[in-house]
Length: 124
Image (cartoon, rainbow, N blue to C red; front, side):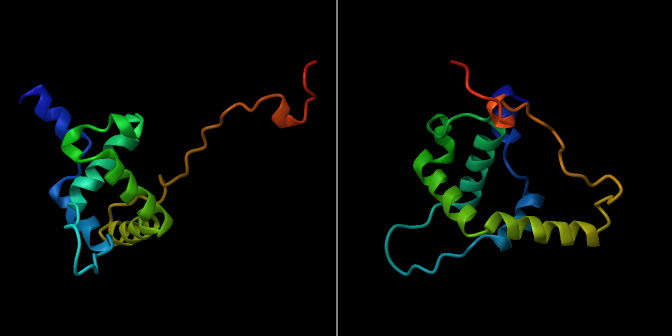
């Protein structure tokens, strides 16, 4: 398989994942105006940014304009779409027996705070 093809698919959702996520994305109610962007393409672009950790302006062209992808991210985050998706996935995956609750945990990574964060005085 071509290395470029592998890189293209690495951060994109599979057909199975898309089938689970797509029903939870908001549907367009607009009757006029510009056609809506492909939601799967927007989600794939968003996932690429979040996993690659790059600035929005570095989003590859295959995902569409970075401003459009960012607009969907901002709207979905403010509207609680990601929380709804996670809640629905937890319920579905638990029902399918795919979550081992003995291993379920929250990342406890810690980051060292500055001295000022602990109440230390400023250096003069």
